[in-house]
Length: 123
Length: 123
Image (cartoon, rainbow over all chains, first blue to last red; front, top):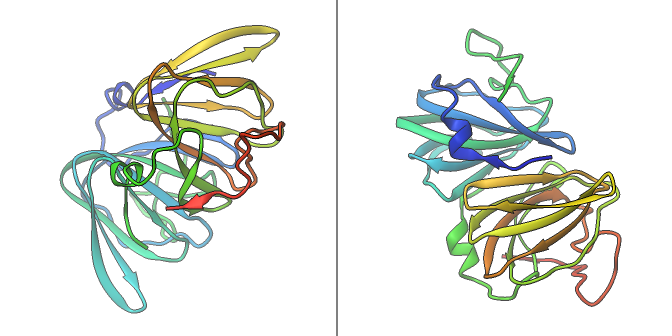
């Protein structure tokens, strides 16, 4: 058991959209991700996801009840995307984000493609 | 679904050691707590707890293998206390902490006393 310094962990990697595991509790992982540019529309059938922004600005488009809107998340703010909700993360510049989600969560949700990271690195 | 600004939520209450619910995902709550002074030795039989420090300095004494040590957690750092581990949070000055823990978690863990908060306020 030891503490985790988020800035120190973010200094250990550069690639965008490659989540790293930095902790686990109960059935969930704590992950760090660098977001940069567009990700893709996807959803998670069985998992709610928490996005806590630590640096930069994260924009998440969401579709609810057939309508689309955009949430803009700044450092010191978080959003919880409930299971089933289609979402599209994007950033204009690099953003540092802490994720909290069940261990079963795949980064691309219902999709499997060249951006899927099935085996996550622990740092 | 809306974002949560942590500083804004912390501005809504003053009491120490009265956790407030600010989000829920999967089987867990996101809670905010102001720590000030000593809490107490306790443990949680079935729940791992994450403490992310946002302001101030949190000291957590832990007992592992019959030995006691102290972890000092600064803003931008978190610690996960696994189930079963005896811990004693304390601060010299007020600290702002985000907790993530299963909905079943009682703030005083295995103890029930005048500092137990059975019904948490949502803010």
